[in-house]
Length: 184
Image 1 (cartoon, rainbow, N blue to C red):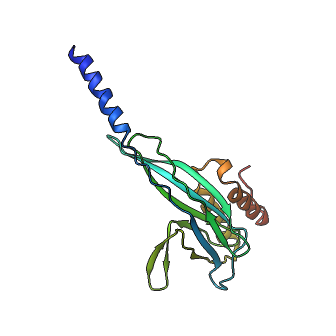
Image 2 (cartoon, rainbow, N blue to C red):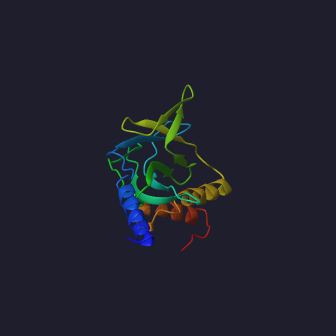
Image 3 (cartoon, one colour):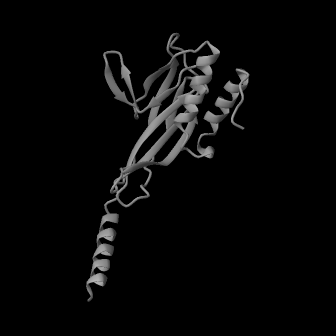
């Protein structure tokens, strides 16, 4: 076999064997939390909750992280939400799935972004099957409300429109209420 042909065959075998190494997390979830007003501790009903997974691609000369999947829901009458179990599959042979990372938004409140919460005695708890409490502070001035709405929207910029419908509806409601233009 000629050297270039042998090299191509060896490269193909290496790529094929590495493709079997893709990091697929076992089925995880559900993820639950209760969203409450930071001051009154009352439930926040109808907040948009976007759970997003990303994929880390190790590469030379530069690695990158890309959007992989998302799921959206809203908080119920008790301020509760649940994202059912799921395990997104990486698209890249060596990809590693990260997340879910949550963005929670309700007009008139600050928003939450992340996957964990600091509780009482400075313990950090991850959002998981056992519900934890996430507190959102009330906002009163027009400037902070418009900035917060824009920031919440920016947190999910990579999520396709169909997977962040509630959040976008709440963003548009807030901007209309404040008399500001939306991005339509």
